Image 1 (cartoon, rainbow over the protein chains, first blue to last red):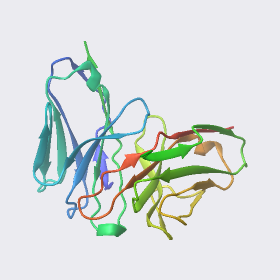
Image 2 (image 1 turned 90 degrees about the vertical axis):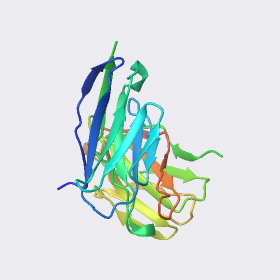
Image 3 (image 1 turned 120 degrees about the horizontal axis):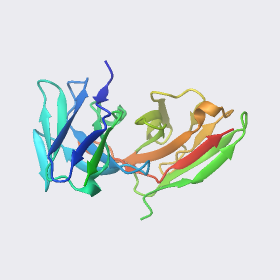
Image 4 (image 1 turned 180 degrees about the vertical axis):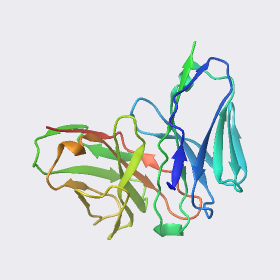
Length: 112
Length: 114
């Protein structure tokens, strides 16, 4: 099993729709999780950090399901500007010695 | 603060040439890493470092070397470039400690190997 798995999509949704995609992780000891947004092969930028059961920031909600080892990202009222690739990465579990592995990313295309 | 800087932004190499991609950060971050991104794929970890003098392999280390002589700099060396190394390369850094794994990325180097 890969360390981090995401459905690459693309997810094609109309403006105003609600869309959610998941990220599964293999290491049950992971304590923190990060969602990044990447536009057109530019550098990824942090969208949201999750340290407990979830986090909410405006139209974006991240929820953590530790039992099933996945974290989801929910986007409400989708905008054209939300079209991007969304990458997830679990935080390190071995303190200062671990490494950060990304999922493949999920592509979202919001249509007018 | 400049954040994470990478040079060059673009590079074209011929097969067999060697070169070094530069990465520097001014945030005093202990953790630094190099990723490559191929079309339609996510970021794959090449090498990473948890502090000056300490480096380790990531998911796709073959054909690349790194060193970390200072906290600020983390260069990536291509020993003998191959067309399969055509990619976009991102350098990233983060602080260390539980919950401090937010990574800051450089703008990337777009490398083409002919």
